[in-house]
Picture (cartoon, one colour):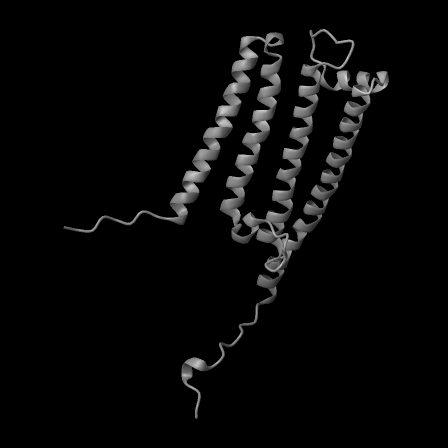
Length: 205
């Protein structure tokens, strides 16, 4: 029985030298992602330094308390003589800030590499991130914008905890910046939705 014409394998077109060179140039981004991994290592080290100082201050270590107060010190504020609830809250918010920035780095490293450099073939891996299964440039932009809003929220909360030490102009400026991030993220998500689901023209009567 002869094979039908539709069953013939599609011939593979050979990529020209120049198009292949241009396509291979995506690997130039690899050092950038490796650099972000090193930045992630710095954040991990910074996290553990801050956490060890917090634990040491809680146990009564004067040197650790001094490091903590230097880290969260605000010009014009009185330095407490011992660890108090407000200082602990500021340090914990700083730790959360580090974690959220680390999450942002992971999104950029993993999602960017998968989207712009090379496939990782993680479909069968049990630890594959849920968002990575449908990641593309648009989805990555929306997730990055959402992460930036979270980081901005942490900084704004740290400012409001010591609102009495800031003038109204500074508080309004930080609030305005946060709202700008929020509106930008909504605009990016809306544009992504329009591109994914374009509106159909109305049917003629």
